[in-house]
Length: 537
Image (cartoon, rainbow, N blue to C red; front, top):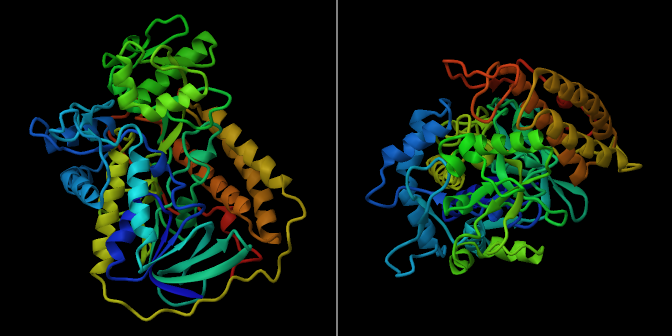
């Protein structure tokens, strides 16, 4: 058994921020499913939204966020995040993040994205997430108080209830070392879920392969509430190419004048929304989905070739380079794009400092539902949320006195064997992602949701049996978590009898007057996946 003051599961911006804030004072263990840079944060292109100029204001940032959130944003949380924007960006600058400066070096270059009323997106060319992740990861690697466990995946949280210890508290986690297949026991005074999103539950996603909803599933099994899982943001513009896997075409490209066009070269966004290409993502994604289905086309086109080549090369070098590798010169040709699952606005319910329902357990970043995003996330508010809540959780953890560690039972696999064949996992994974895309995508119906839930129920029994009888593997853990997340998404969608923000249902096309979050409580709704099985202590 290993013992730490703080166990962080996930190595994206939220996890790295929390680790670096706490490590000067406490012993930290950071668990990364693959390498430290395998996260959605590392893939983020656009930037970080913050009020950094005199012609902008906190009130306008708040208002833009509330409008995008379609009435479901928590006003107090929205204000807290907007007010801390400048300070968090300054912290990143102090860490050495190389944000793009104006040509005359008069300050930092700010861009504008859909839904924002001002240029307030600070960025590092078109690879902001990579620049931030690389800078912070280097500091984590070199910090003597941070133990980094790469190529490790959390199996489940350890709670007092599950191991027969008095008091409802999170005590750490069981973690699989993918290198040798052994499950280790990690005890911690505090545990933080920073596992990112759920994009891999869908067939098409902009997310990396690690985005399998692990934090949401583990927290649910541990007794935490989840909220607003029906609000899945589909990014309007993912590169459509047989050789391009999950490559995002940044919102900033439209912010700098990129136009969406049909195959014949005509624009279509003005017919859907007066804001055109700068409408919020849900509006743009539905418009593209509508045009593709109406015309029977495989994709639409995003064209910025009318801008000077030097401008395109300096602002979008990563996008230019990737497209050029695939035979597309974006200085002269439009980019074929389709919508893809991008971001989950819902997640584990937390308060304004990242605390969940379970004492000792925090959730930060995309794993959490803080109330900031409501029914639709405003572009570039996500990295800001990671920073603000990573710092808030750190302050809360540092304010608490240390307590004696608890001896925890080892992982018990005495009643299981090695899997006889892995095809069950592969087949179920593919089936899950395909029916979630077809039935629980951009446009939903009651019948489609019911079909999805029926499929989930069938797969759940198969996966539970597999999990009960065979040793855990990375793929099995991910499939189990994805199935749990799919169930939560579908149940949340079935409970919302309206269309709001990212949730659009043909059977309930109108938006109700009162905006009410969808909150699921484990005490009232136990999944069959939480039944006792052969490996749990």
